[in-house]
Amino acid sequence: MSNHFIVIAEAGDFIGEQKLITQHLNGEMRGNQWYMADGSIWDIVVTGVGAINVMHTLRDLPRDAKIINIGYAGSANYAIGSAVCVNEVRLNHPCVTYPEPELHLQALPLEYLKESQTCLQSVCYSNTDFVLQSDYKDCVFDMELAYIAALGFQNLCSLKIVSDNLSLHAYREVAAGVE
Image (tube, rainbow, N blue to C red; front, side, top):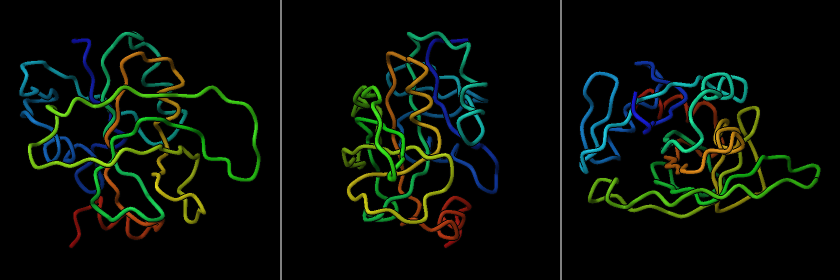
């Protein structure tokens, strides 16, 4: 096993994020590994959705591993299909405030992205459930990234693809590839 991991929540044929790897990253899939254009080999790790699945799946990975989290995210105002390079992640708890550590991510190397790929820079808010409404703008929402970051990985970066504008129905359509 390498020390490079691409972490996704779901790999299923119907609704899955594995297809995002080939759509947005330079390289090719061989078996359950991604061969990046720079020659590095990345193991694909599927966590399952949500905090408990993330912690259970990733708890034994070395903290100095290089990790790319790629997946779908919702946004109140970013266009569906937008690519977002996440630079900071927080928990989504809009009704209360309490002190939390700042969780900053590494920048995704631009050479990892397909040539035509442009990437917004944004914060990601992780939630324990699907976000259906929010006053937060210019950000994305997911259900895993804050928990991955809180595990203490030193070389974590993330690419989120906007699947919906806070609509579970739209997410399901986009994630399943429905036109």
